[in-house]
Length: 544
Figure 1 (cartoon, one colour):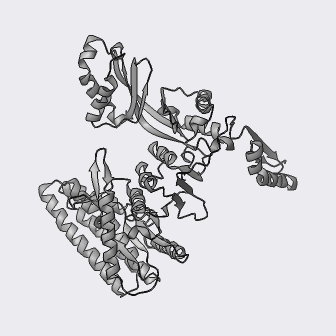
Figure 2 (cartoon, rainbow, N blue to C red):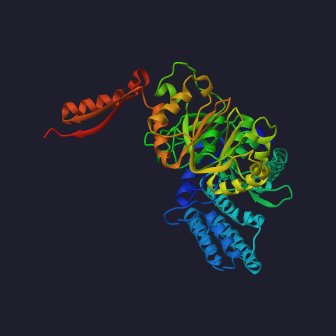
Figure 3 (spheres, one colour):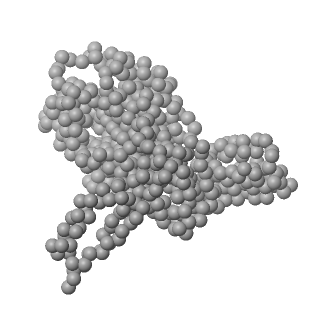
């Protein structure tokens, strides 16, 4: 079976494979890893954007479909640019006049010719289906995987093979623009593909990496589909689950999952470890490194996920697995002692809080069910729910673009209650941000909620609503959009800074001053970890 070979899965995002030089770097990393005896499967995205090509290949294909649907024949030029980009990459990577180069260009040009004919047909009717769009945009992954496989054969990995994920991966589209994986059928397909590949393999020696197309799959009826937008990493963890890999590495362009958005919090730092639940919570609340569903296949088989930066190989990155590294201590203070409990903070901006209030809700069974069934039927996703124990009011958060639809649906559903006065208020507060503190052991750490609320109060931030589950994987508050940046910085400092922060200004950076700064730098980690003192140099000036 394909899943009995102790695979390691690497997934490369579009930025990592955006052009020939980056593809070569990926190949170099693969070669170094396989020389250690690793059985390697790499999952590739389509080429992302670069300074020379400022638009992602996937976006270019989407634009071509959109133009054809509007009867705009300029899509032909778009396809021409895509073809030129891949031909140029192939000529830079594959030997001139080589059979591999000739075959790659020939298949690419045939694909472009077929896509052009299909899109011309679309211009006649002026409409495109989702299935057709999925078929078109999946070509970016195919072209990149074919090119990488051909290149690997020229640099000592003659046994490299390519898998079109649509031959194996079967998914069923579901609500909320997601898909559900049919693991049983996909596993059978994987074994069939593996047996066929073994029967066709030659006696060539050399490493045998497997190159797989990311992002694309097929439905049970054989129709091509995708894992939906931002589902590229999902394909990597699905392949890891199917192969029962020993580990999955997501290669990206950042140093891992950060404790907060580094663009908003200058003190944010890469996290060395997260549990699956913590990673899921962080991604759900806005951390962009992992898609929320990406952890699910790995959780199923307890496969560790590593997040690494291809542009900074020295960075440790973040490991996501099912093991907790926290030693619970009820007397936790600030700084390093809190970092293991509250792993990070994330925010969802541009939200609205919908509030339903009235005496007619008190003690009436099924009211909450009726509210959320109404919202579900309107096709609206609820991000957070908060309800008082008196049942006098219920509020929940949605994206601001859905607020008006939610209000209209609720006012129609409860029109009799509103007319009779049993419901006094159905309205929304717009311009909100949902801020979450994430950590698997918040429930065991006395004072976590108090510390967060105190930090927000000291920063002058008003809390509009709050929610916390019994498992306490997160503490969530709703605040005003205008307070989001200040609030994020305040709560991050409360949990990540040391008990005592010492601001140092140095006058006279001569020999003595230089030695003093070097001593600060040498003992900084020790002071933080053991003494819980954070020394920060705020200014340096000469004495003249």
